[in-house]
Image 1: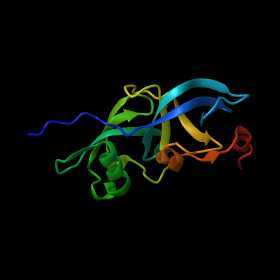
Image 2: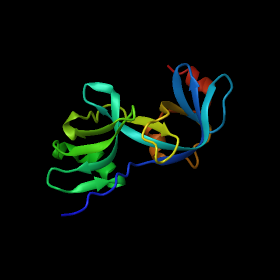
Image 3: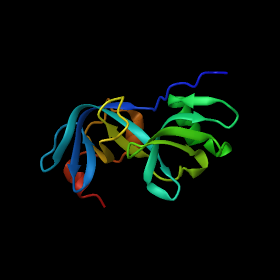
Length: 165
C-alpha cells in the first residue's frame, strides 16, 4: 500500500501589502492612502474553490483522492479539479476551508462555475487566511504570478478600483 502524501496546496508568493478599503481586502504593490494596511511584506496567496450552494465557503485543496486510488497534490491536484473533476465526481478533496477548518469534501459538492477565492495567508504553514482578496492594485504587473492575475481584477490605482462599475 502506498503512503498518503503530504498536502501541498498551490501557492503563489506576493511581495506587497494587504489593504482593507470599503470593507474589501485588496492586494497592492505599495501602501495606499485612505486604506488600512492589514499586513505587508512577503505574503502567501492560495486559491479556494467555492462550495455548491454555499459560495461564501471555499476549500483550499491540498490533496485530491480519486475514486480509483490515485492521489494528487499541488499543481496536479489543481489542474485535475479545474479541468477533469467532472469525470470523477466522487473524488475527495482534502484541505482547509476559508475559515481555517480542516475539511474533506466530494468534488460533486464544489461549484467550479463560481469565481476562484483568492486568499492571503501569513506564511506557508498557516491554515487560516488573513483575508479574501477582491482586487489587485498595480500599475505594473511585471513579476506578479500569472495565476494571481488570472483570478483577480487588476486596477492601476486605488481610485480606479473605487470608481469601478
